[in-house]
Length: 249
Image (cartoon, rainbow, N blue to C red; front, side, top):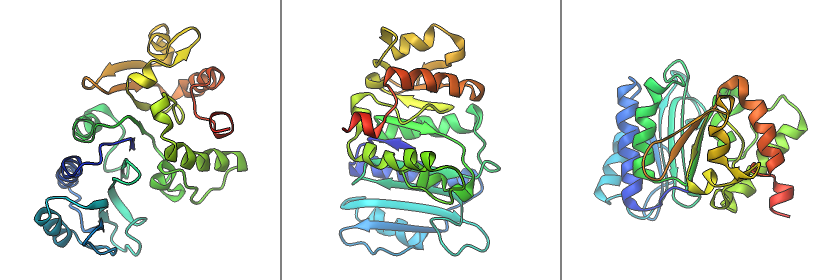
């Protein structure tokens, strides 16, 4: 999930072409697509039809676009997918979801694709996470609760991100949380943690993960799953992780 992406026709075109190429490369060609914007319908249609219309209009006047490779007995495209990708120029995000059996969370399989998305979309912040399909990985990224069987506090934390997105809190350097993969720009890397920058704080202890530059704007901060809770606790205390009650009071 990438936030604060460039909303230009060029970035939408770049995202669309990169996603299509990766769908094909995974052996999951897109079946359906939906385009929203001036002169477009609001219903899912065949990918080929939607793609032709996008190209004929040079990706102009689009507010959102999504493509999906469906499961064999799919009824709801936005839920019954093997691979899903969406771009919203209104809400400034890119969402990409795939079953881990198709695209496991590893550098060898995912990092080339992520690099391409970072280059074309120019995000201000991003996260990669694993989540049960029944709990709505895409919904989670947008701050919406789906299929929750856990406590009320987790639901409130998830929903709070809706306000975080609308206020573009990444522009202030705030993180949504700490994940195995976190994509940070200078605003996040420069946040103060224990009298030094987040970047310096991470570098002082291997248990805090490793940061590497992907390009001149975005760096990948990778944190081992076993260390997530420890790192999360420290950054909560430092006020780096977004808290609706604290940061939007």
